[in-house]
Each structure stands twice: as C-alpha cells, then as structure tokens.
Length: 195
Image (cartoon, rainbow, N blue to C red):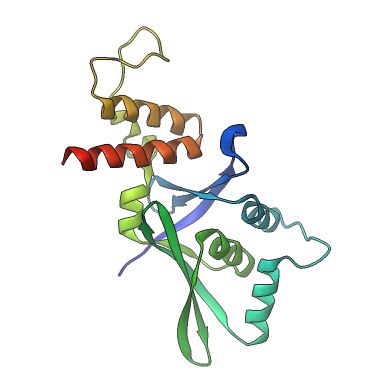
C-alpha cells in the first residue's frame, strides 16, 4: 500500500478542550490536514523536541529512542494506518538485524518518537480520505457558503449537513482544528445516516 507523507503543521488547544490538544498533520504533496486529538503529556513531548528543548532528565520518548539506539534498531518511519470508531492507530516501523518489524502505537507516541529520530511520518490514504480536512487550496471555499446577512447565523435554507460544512469551513479558517475534527466526525455520521 502506498502511504501519504505528512509533516507536523502544529499543535493547538482551546480553553474548552479539557487539557486535550490537536496534533495537526499536513500532506507534504497536498493540502489536506489531519487533526488528531492527543493528551497534554504527548503534546508536551512533541513540542519540546520540535523546539529542541532538552529537559533535565530523559522523558519516556527519549528513553524509547535511546533503547532502540542501544539495541541497534533504526526507525524507518511511522504510519497512521487505521481509524476505527473515532480512534486513530499507528505503527512504528523499524529495521533490526537485517529484518523489518513494527510496533503498535498511539499516533501521539509514534509522532513523539518520529521527531526524535528524524523518521518520516505517513498516513494511510483511507485514513486521510475519511478524516482529512481540505484546506482552501483544495477547495474548502467550494463548500456551501451562506448569503445570510449575519455571519454567525446559519442559512436556514441549507440542509443540516450544509450548515455543518459552513461551520467546518469557519473552524478551519480560525485554525480551530479540535472543533474542525468534531464537525468532520458529525458530518460523516450524518452522511452515513442519509445513505
């Protein structure tokens, strides 16, 4: 299977998130973004490495990196390869003693390790198709737009899905990826009910 390479676009949070963050991955050769909700500890581990800040003692992901180095294993890449019941799954793929292997991991842990080992990050096409959010370059502006006099009032002549797509567009423009991810999931559920 051909996977799609992504890069870390950023980490974001909102006051109502209850301590959760959105890890935003973006296609390297495209314009879709994939927000994945992660915990504060994992967000901190990723952010510290991206900012090249060395904590006084090794963090868990540093320990994993050092362990892999000590046994001579090379992380070749990580892959977010599945989305099941709203939960993302990932694999850490590695080479060791002339063979290849993989470890099941949460995407947040896999990405925290990838940034420490300069390993590329990939996403399965089906995952990006299901959960990816197109940016303006790919046609977010082509989503239903309102001719309503007030920007905050949804156009009642539109269907519920179209109104939610408008909210999705606004969330993306505001870079509120947590809200965008929730709206994306609600839209997918509604479209599934209609079929």
